[in-house]
Image 1 (cartoon, rainbow, N blue to C red):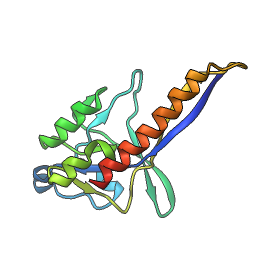
Image 2 (image 1 turned 180 degrees about the horizontal axis):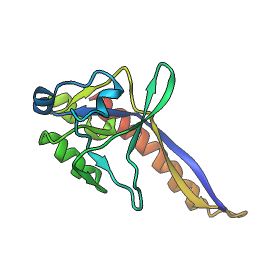
Image 3 (image 1 turned 180 degrees about the vertical axis):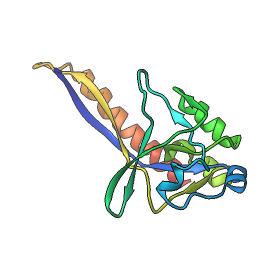
Length: 155
């Protein structure tokens, strides 16, 4: 590709579920609990994907956990609504669910095995004489996104 990538920010993720789901199904204590029939994971489906997995950080390094569940969607907001309704466990960017965690509507789980963070980035075409507006908008996005995340997590 002749595209360039500029990192905007690292995005921390969290695995969580509604208190009523955890009361019904129990609280997973290890990553292996997610792959048992005891738990339903809510799955983000990417176009063309056939496998669902979450990368978790463990004392032995990153571990790929092949998760399953009865519900999948290509819309992250739908997954959050399902989790709030007690339908399963989600793996989401912390800033997207922080307010629900603060309200007690979602509970973080497996905190000793956090999901690997993801990198939000901007892709743009490489040109020898880059239009200054491209750099300005990317700088603006990076600054605003980082401030927004700090504000959400600090509130």
